[in-house]
Length: 206
Image (cartoon, rainbow, N blue to C red):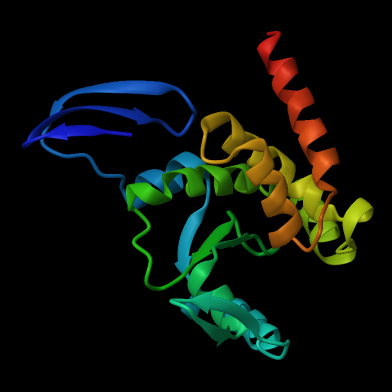
């Protein structure tokens, strides 16, 4: 969040660790790609450069297309095309020292509008940083992709979404809706909201 008047500004921004920082008079402010990587523990890669991402997109395009409304008309889009152009995928294979954040080619990764997203992905990068975390993520994503109660995506996403709730990008209801809609019905909305409320209450008591 910033208020800029002319070439000088007093900018109030949210840092990656969640604290508020007030910067003095500056000419401009911009994140750097290397700074984000070093702070959050992953490396950026364009999706088009990665064979795994292209393979996943090919498989997703074999599924029925997504129909959405745009400008009063309906548009059909391939699921793989959406995967390559709209979404970030963070993952770590056994030979990788650090996780990779695969992003759409058209994105400017240092755009401040993506700051909350990179914070969110940083939680996942931390989860993947150890051998146990790597095994856990593989188990939960690939071996437990079941809907609702047994979905591993709930276990993976809940802490990152809790951070989004605490910092403001999402409300409890929006986070629960995203978990339900975007992650294949990972967890009942009322259960998710109850868990997040419990965690927020615990944090307020310390």
